[in-house]
Length: 268
Length: 201
Image (cartoon, rainbow over all chains, first blue to last red; front, side, top):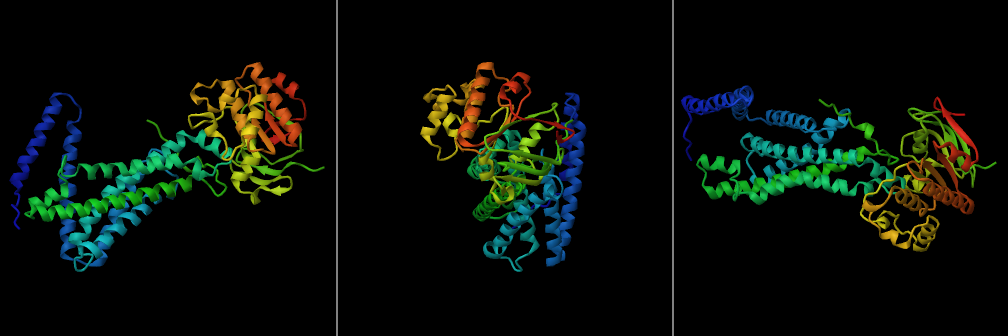
């Protein structure tokens, strides 16, 4: 396996393309030239930084460092889930539901895959553990955020119906059944779509990367299939868990709808 | 004297402490300026909003009754009833009794076909009558009526008043009725309690 190493010159040529695009948007007055350049600079800095961190991690492969890296990734993903909610839970729950379900789904699935399917020695070998966890977190994050957002939005919109049903003697479980199903479905849809389109409409990024790195296509495909299934499982369990936890939190022990547990929406 | 619904030291975020004794067959009207908390009182009694203090139904503490059972027996009917499925009868409580429903339809001057009517096509008068009927099918012991005839014409208003009256007369249930309309107040009669500064006077 061999990779053609890219020189600074090669990257500068690619950067020129972005600068040219920025010039064009400036001329067309799209008003995105500045943010395009800033985003470009961020890409360089963030990726270089993470490259250095990963290099250091690979050089000092110790369980403690790998675990720390994993926790930092989880913390950031938890924040992302919270930031994507229009009506988030007040207090620790706003962060906690997303982070807890991602911990259970993405972490559990990664550890399971490392110990039983991929099987590197040691099982937490950072070269395998960190990219796997990264892909799982990235995808479960989207699924959980979508599911939670849909749930809180619909419950808020349908609050009169929910309370009307409670007043007639329904339990909160049956009064919110359709809304919970809809929320879980919207969390799962991107993954299902990605699986259905894999290889036909798009060549998945990980597989493409492995092929570029010289891995035989069939080997790369096997890894991609594994990842796809792990992502589906992680996202599915995560979204279902998050929607269930969040719906429980929306009602109290006397099954009263407690929208006061959501933070008010800031407009503007 | 025994109370059907007994309230002692009820407090919510905005109200209280409140005491109240509603007797079987009695209709008590709740009045008060808008924003004084009339709806909040009814919602707290139906256990839709958090509250502290003692609420008892025929001597039994609310905490000892599962919330769905409590809400079937202490039925809250808002000014605007909520509908979520496509046909009327889909909104009825599970295991509803056809004969009972037909008897109520007759009293509300509604035809039998109305059980299959589409919600989209109901007039506001039909919605309110069917909304009340739906609550009656649970055989509630206390009705919490939050301006059930707001926005209705006189004919529909009268129908609802008569239906509630006859429900109270035959079943030994009691009702708390929030109304803005002074004519309706004199038609309904009975005790009138006013909420002022979060208290009943």
